[in-house]
Length: 188
Image (cartoon, one colour):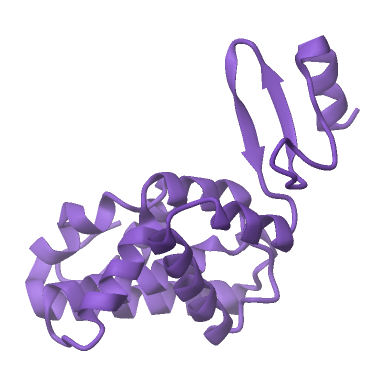
């Protein structure tokens, strides 16, 4: 039995599923009186519509992340919707946009180091279950290299700084932690 069918049976009349919600976006939605609605975009067009509902800073940050994904050759893979929603909730894209705007020309500063880590972390948006081993290694190397730059600038304190970890979705924290292994005294 499919997930939608199970949810419909579980939620009864409280279940709503359609081609569009009240705002006209094609998302699947399950609503219960006891829970908040789960709204996740299902296609790239839906992702773009979903992003357009958020602040201009979030939209610009998402464009920066998509550009970095494209530069890395990972744009052929879909975006992980759960990671996208969590990244938006944690203001990852707003922070990425602010770092890009304020720090991109300030090489060697803490903010510039954070920008490098955020850009590398944005690669975690892609659906990682579809990545080849070589692509996973490349993604990990980019995060590791960004961590090394931060270590050169700020040492271990820079890598541990809450301004890096505060905006990262939980699953990305584990990926970044693993990628930082071996930088200074960092052990994953």
